[in-house]
Image (cartoon, rainbow, N blue to C red; front, side, top):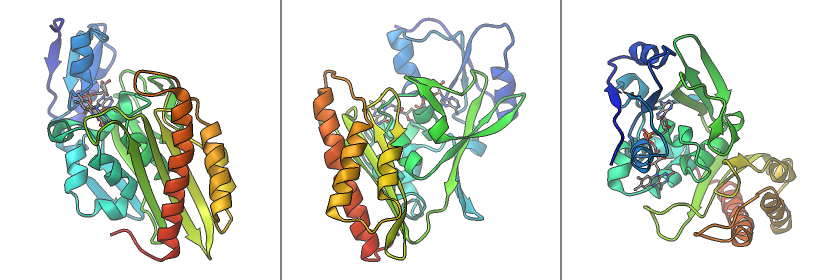
Length: 294
Ligand SMILES: Cc1cc2nc3c(=O)[nH]c(=O)nc-3n(C[C@H](O)[C@H](O)[C@H](O)COP(=O)(O)OP(=O)(O)OC[C@H]3O[C@@H](n4cnc5c(N)ncnc54)[C@H](O)[C@@H]3O)c2cc1C
């Protein structure tokens, strides 16, 4: 059973930020879809005095594109991503991740901000957002700042977000026509299973060469991270099976997986190699043949 807690339901972002401001009235924690918060409350791994619900703040929901930038409200749900016909063009890897996320009921309430802020190394939307070069906006009653997602996590379930800050939006550059991204979740089942290894990749080509590469790894380190040395091994080159295999081996070396009930660390590291190799090769083939995301 749950411990007792209060629930505040603000009607505006300003009101929510005021409710989260330090006040000496006990601990206050945001709740969006509640698909992590309620599990933690029930397991008593978290016992806030008051939950501040941001789920009904319409300003924090939805996706827009302007001036070469995609902006997604923090309370956008996984189902919102899947329902949006523009999302494949705006962030293909994110649609891949949403497509294998939980089951329908969880997708309908689980939010993007909640997925980032829960800090799980297995959070499926995070690798996809990392390869899109996303940044997050953190707002409190005293400040508003933007942080690259690559600099957001500092350790296992640790981040630069202060307790009174809300993650209000996520933005990233609109992918160009010469770029593509994808995500693959290795798990025991499709949907409703915790990720064993998650890999996202994005490539941008120019004049037959890889102009930029992004590789992000989930569930193989204390937090979702990029394999930056592996990325640099792909950049500036016309990719070949050999160069892709070398970069994939490097990506595996940049992971630090643990053994747990789902898989051994050794298996996970091997799968990083296999999946990075596969996704980079597929993405390169797609771009080389001129097939665009739609
Ligand atoms: C059955 C089940 C299946 C699941 N399957 C998957 C899966 O396949 N892949 C996956 O990645 N996850 C999965 N999850 C975990 C969970 O659904 C996701 O992490 C989800 O995105 C969390 O979003 P939420 O809105 O429910 O967050 P909440 O539970 O509301 O919040 C999560 C954390 O984020 C904080 N928070 C929420 N919103 C904000 C905000 N705007 N600003 C600051 N902090 C905020 C909360 O305080 C809390 O610490 C699953 C969970 C369940 C119960």
